[in-house]
Image 1 (tube, rainbow, N blue to C red):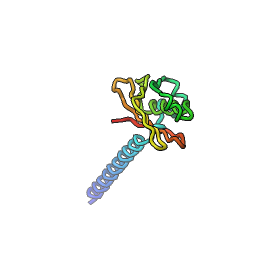
Image 2: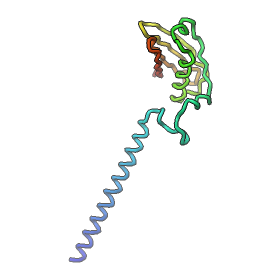
Image 3: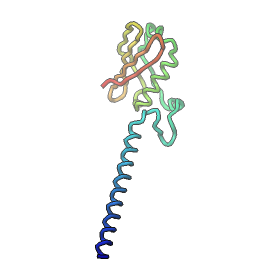
Image 4: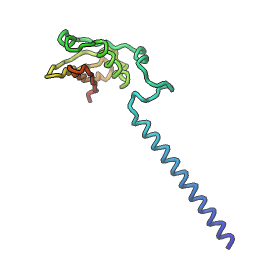
Length: 141
């Protein structure tokens, strides 16, 4: 009877250890998934959080900026900074020229299409809210 109790205790300990290992493994997977879903601005590269000073590490030039577009964008420096930030945060720093391929002014919105000179010839759409002077950029698929 003593052997039976010892075997039962050992089995219960083994089951408990297996359950703890599974719980630790699942917790590790969840933490990894949470890190993958962080907005790119919150990720740390080399242990350092993102800041605008990192934008000094590369240059990108916007070509084809017509006077009609410049007239609508009140602060070109802010627009160019936000564009550069988008390029940097989306890993498109293999481009150094963004050419405006088309633009459209509709109601209170300016839509600008860019093509980068990177190997993938990435296309980007920029939308400027003309009343608020807010900028949104997206990469075209």
